[in-house]
Image (cartoon, rainbow, N blue to C red):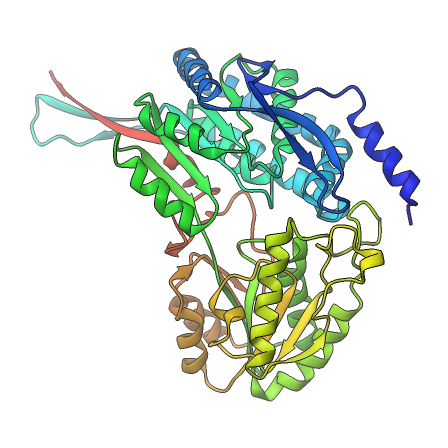
Amino acid sequence: MLSAQELNQLTQQTFAGATYGVFINNQWQGADRTFPVENPATGEVLVTIPDAGAPEAAAAIDAAYAALPAWSALPAIQRADLMRKAAALMLEQRERLATIMTLEQGKPISESRGEIAYAASFLSWFAGEAERVYGQIVPASSANKRILVMRQPVGVCVLITPWNFPAAMLTRKLGPALAAGCTAICKPAEQTPLSALELGRIFIEAGFPPGVVNIVPTSDPVPFSETIFADERVRKISFTGSTEVGRILIANSARTVKRMSMELGGNAPFIIFDDADLIPAVKGAVASKFRNAGQTCICANRIFVQRGIYDRFAEAFTREVAAMPVGNGLQPDSLIGPLIDQPARQKIERHVADATAHGAQILTGGAPLPADHNPTGTFWKPTVLANASSQMLVAQEETFGPVAPLIPFSEEDEVLAQANGTPFGLAAYFYTRDVSRVLRIAERLEFGIIGANDALPSTAQAPFGGVKQSGLGREGGSVGIDEYLEVKYVSLGL
């Protein structure tokens, strides 16, 4: 256990001599305003950084557009070499990068270390994909013609990332963009800009040319958004965030018909059938629900348990959850860190109050930590709610916090109707030992990502994305680079 003095010393050492700015053309630039980056575990200001506005957004577009011809013409193997160097540097500097992530985002240090490795894997994976962007020769309909199909970079891309995975969500977009030959402007979330800016240092050290990657932190996204949407040189936008914001971006994109890809909100069902192996199902549900304090787009939001196993599952699950240590993410034993801010806590309070008012019982948790262990008021005890229902707010909305509602069910058709009864379709999970059921349920669940006896399905080599109102397009996997490529055909007369 680290003392308060040791935590303070670690924070000071981490940022000793560090300077941050708007990252354009491989240089740190200032802005007319600044904004503070706070530690959600303590409320202290970590650093104050330049707050970009419309002029900085325009300068980033200029830089990316100027760098595009040379970067897209660079042989793919050379782009891949630079990406692999950046991935290797991330792993070499993992401890520092993980510490910064925990300080600005709050997640346990063990999770931050894992995220840095996960983030580096997207650069490594797409470095390989850069070397495999193939064209085609299509049989023509006449003897004196040949049809050639080319795949070329879309152009300047804007990548907008969330606060919950500040490194991995950036490289999951940057990896395919850079591999395809695009240049990029990155806008990190205002709560967690430091992880992105640290990657700017990595790209300089790896040898990336100026202007290929630009990072524009801002506390007010409106001037930034207005600038990028009005500029026809910006050809593509990739966004990860809420469905509400996604709708606005889609509407704004119509003015210049920009290409869009989006990973939006979720409401993931986690289904445990009677024939599931109990212990793996319990551990899987805990891992899915409580990773990053439940602040993930694909975490279990509704846990459906078949009645034949409900009581045994609830008992074992509650025992595991009640034992999870809550505290500052830099403490080695912490498994649950703080929520990102007060609105996040208020949403959880509203969901728990609504559930108990409608008959749910609190099996563990259900309240914030005591004030003497809760300096920011954002530490919430991991919570299990028994006898929840699909009509409660906790099942209707994405909670985005460490609250697990257990919903009993009887029949397969019943639970599928409830699981699919949402406008969202990002991720879903189920546990069963019946092979026929595995295929049957996987086919019938209306979600883009399915974990069958697997609570942690995310990986760089698989396509990640949702259906319905959970998004457009896919990130990761062999199809991930397609989002950053245009298809052109040449009809050649002989």
